[in-house]
Image 1 (spheres, rainbow over the protein chains, first blue to last red):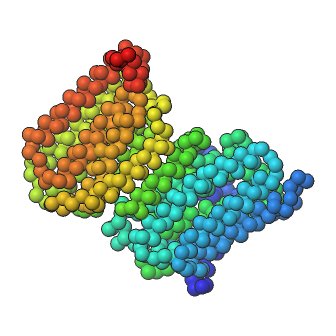
Image 2: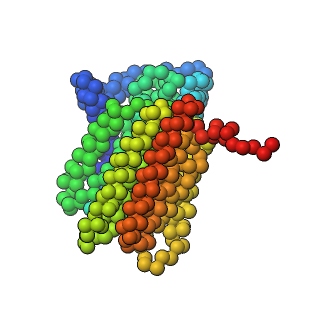
Image 3: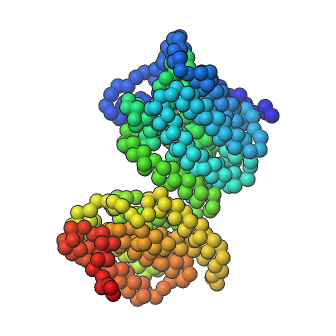
Length: 300
Length: 217
C-alpha cells in the first residue's frame, strides 16, 4: 500500500501556510498595501501553540475533539494526493472517494464542536457550512468522476499522472469544464470570496470562521493549520489537472507544480480582490453551476 | 478542427447556462451576443479547407448582426425601459439551472437517438443545438420581463441555426439572409414594443398584460 513517495506529504506539511500567505500578500498588493511578511502564518501558528487553551464550562469532550480530528483527517487525506508527477504515499482503487469522505469527517467534527458550544452564531455558521458543503460534494465527485472516466484509472495518483499534454489535446473541453467546476469547489470549500469572506469580522455573515470562534491556543493553531492543508489538498488536485507537462525529470516536474500552486494562490488573491462576496442566497446557485459544469464534463 | 468545433459547442452550452442563471439583463444580453459570435465561428470552422467567399462572408455578417447589432438594440431597449434586472422570475434561478441540466440530459439523449443520414461532424452538434433551443423555450416560459423573453426567442433562433449547420452542409444564401433579416426585424419591432409597453405601463412585466385580454365572463 505504501508504494509512493513521501515527498508530496512533506511539501504539503511545510508549504501549505505559505500558500495562504501568498494569497494574503496578493490581496495586500492589489489594495496598495505592503502586506504582512510571507512567514506570518508560521509565526501565528507558533504563537498560538505556546498559548494555553480556554474551555467554556458548557462544552464537553466533543468540543476538544474537533480540532485534532479535523487536522488528522486532512493529513490522512493528503497522504493520498499525488503532487507534481510524484505518486501519493498510498494509492488504491477508489481512493478519491476516501479523500472526499475524510474531508466530510473533519467537517462533521468541526460542526459538532461548534454546536457543542451552544452559541447561536456558531450554530448558524454550522448550518451554513453543512448546507454549502452538501452542494459542493456532488460537484467534487462529478468532477473527479469525469477525470476517472477520461483517464480510465480508478485511483487519484495514476489519474493525475496520466493527464498529459496529449490528453489536453484531445479532450480540452472536458478537462477545462472539470477544472472550472473544481475551482468553484476549491473556493467554496476553503471559505474564500465569492462564497465566504475569510477576513470578515461580523459573525452574522461568516460561514467557516464563525464555527471556530470559541477555540483558542493550540486548538486554534490546529484549525488554522488544518485549513491551510485543506487548501493545499484541493489546489494540488487542480494543479494536477491544470499543469500537464511531464518532462520526465522529477525536479523540473515538481518545480512546475510548485509554480502552478504559486499561480493559483495569486489567482485566488486576484479573485478575492476583484469580486464581492455573494449574498448567502446566491451561493447555492454558484455551487449548482459547479455541479452542472462537472456533470457536463462527465456526460461529454 | 474537431477540437475547435467541440470547444465552440461546449461554450455554446455554457452561454446557455449563463442565460439561465443570471438575473442581470446586461449579462443575459452578453450571453446572447457571445452565442451569436460563436455560431458565426462555428459555421466557418464547419467547412474546413474549402472556404468560399460566400461561405465566410455570410457567417461573418450573421456574427456581426447577432453579436453586435442586436445586443446594441437590446441594450438601448434596456436603457429606455429602465430595467436592470429580472426581479422575480416565475421559477427561481436555482430551479432554472436544474431545468437547464434536465434539458441538457434530454438533448444528449435525443442527439444519441437521432440518426441523421449524413452523420454530423461532431456528436455534440445536435445535443448543443437542441439544448440551446430548449434554453430559449425555458427562458420564454419562465421570465416576466418582455426583454428577457426576446432574449429567449433569440436563443431559440440560435439553436435552430446551430441545428441547421448540423444537418445541412450549406443552406441557400437567400434563405439564410432571409432568416437573418427576419430576426433583425423581429428584434427591432420587439425593441420598439418594449419601449412602448414600458412608457405606457411603467414596467415591462408581461404577465400583468393578461388583464388586457378579452374575457368571456
